[in-house]
Image 1 (cartoon, one colour):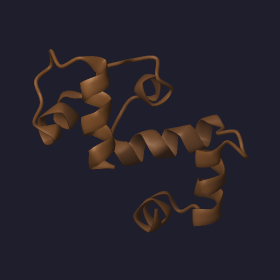
Image 2 (cartoon, one colour):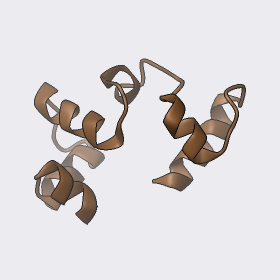
Image 3 (tube, helix red, strand yellow):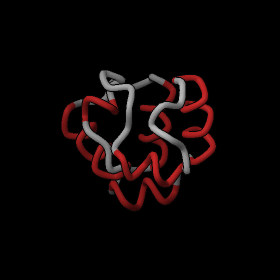
Length: 78
């Protein structure tokens, strides 16, 4: 969380509030997170299932992996 805080220039307590749902994420903050994770806003808001190709390569998985397996692998990366 410290790395995210430094990169996005947001306090760790604020990031924690976003993660726990105590605060709603506005567009400017969503853009910061999308930029940090190098994903689209659609992916960040779970409107896309497949992440950018570079994330798939980083995870070492094929594009035909099922959603549950993908999420398990993706969460291990975080």
